Image: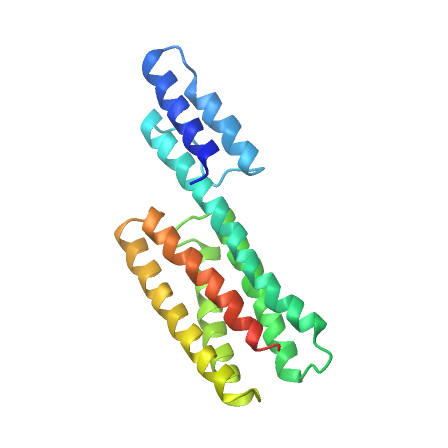
Length: 195
């Protein structure tokens, strides 16, 4: 977590404990609106501790919405590639849909929402199609193919642990850590499709 966010959380708790007059609701709403133009949740109906926890979750999810932008790098590889195939146009379109859905979801991370459902479906479809294309269709050296297989295997492992920890505690630090690594590996792995 960013040191500025930590210090802000500590200050929020400090002032809420010292003064009963501290209007935490206005403070939390103001800072949540700074992070995002509109909040996915209303903080008004929750006690101070719950509001602060939801604010922390919102801040962490902003980081994951930015790590989704790792998928921009494969799209840049696609745009710079002079020898594009019809398959690569399809893959780039699928990757763009993934990028948009994932960014929308992590900007407002509501578990089991419409966007969460379709983000998951598109991510799984993309994983399978990119794996098949890179490992069996794309003409690359055997060393690059082995590297691709290792990256795809690590990406599936990080996704498994991200999913495992999200079921135990939605938006926990360990869940975010695994999902951050997953976003990074997907960006690297998908880039190989457009080399």
